Image 1 (cartoon, one colour):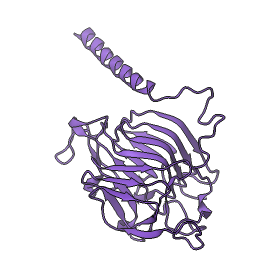
Image 2 (cartoon, one colour):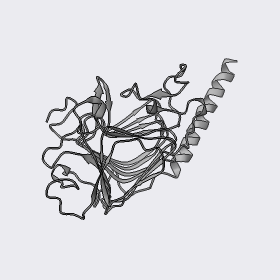
Image 3 (cartoon, rainbow, N blue to C red):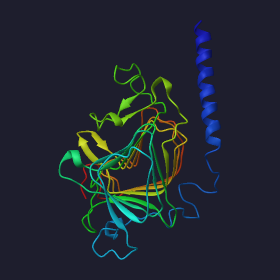
Length: 306
């Protein structure tokens, strides 16, 4: 019996490894170089390593195309499009819920308006079943950034993007009455029911939470509770049909990218000058990542001193 069980376990592991390898074959690009960037610099045009002095819509001295200011104060519960004719200011936590899709046009700027009270720290949370479709271009990236003026921006000015999905995670194996097996509530938002992630026993590893292409996330992250921080981008149980490609997180207060379980893939990722981990994986993350560049600042570390 012991030999039979051992053989069965070996077979299961082998089948799982074969499945993972088959999925990876269609993801990875074969390249003639080692590292994240070769002769062709895929960061050119859309990435920005000096965003602190950028003059964005809403800043004094902005001379670009005239755009309208739109304050966002309520959750998004139906399909909505944010256009590059406007710039958007987030007041407090904004949830995309009720299976709605928020579509953001290339070149759109979204800014977090920081409040001194914990309840008003801005973020965008994509709840399970909802989608964020933010597809910029190399010439017109979508920018999520600080609401402060040039020269006054700092990491932690707003709380970043949280994407919650229905893919499998390996946490909470026994489950509770409020959170069945393999579902959790994101640790930094214990009172937010829309911060649940993981599909439980009915998980869907092919789940889609939308797409992020040519996106910059600047000055995000927030310490809501001790050792329970919001990152620049948090992926909770996000499925592999979600697209994450050409995404940069800069000057984040905690991790730049963190995956809690799930199967979402990532390509062309830049983590720049964060205070904690550049790329962090927890709770059984099983996605693939290729072309990931981490650039540290010599005077920035987890204690947030610079």
